[in-house]
Length: 91
Image 1 (cartoon, rainbow, N blue to C red):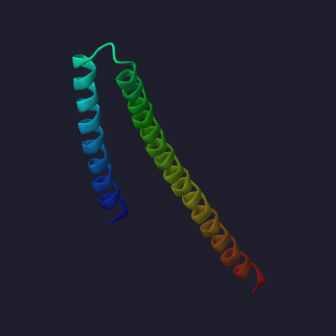
Image 2: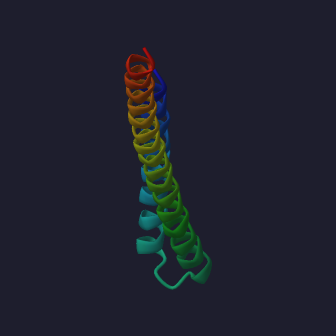
């Protein structure tokens, strides 16, 4: 469910970002010497790259957590097996 909701939020963001970037690009083409529009265009690009980096960091964090959980579960399973073996030796 989390992935589904995140995908919806991502689509909403990309839709709004694409609309804003398209409008800014259109305005820059109409007024190519407007320094403020160029600054807004550059700022918008940086914000979009920042969001992409945040999403990549989040995916990396989720993958790391998944890997660590797998390793922990594997270690716990091995510990349980060792305890079971130890019980048979104590008899």
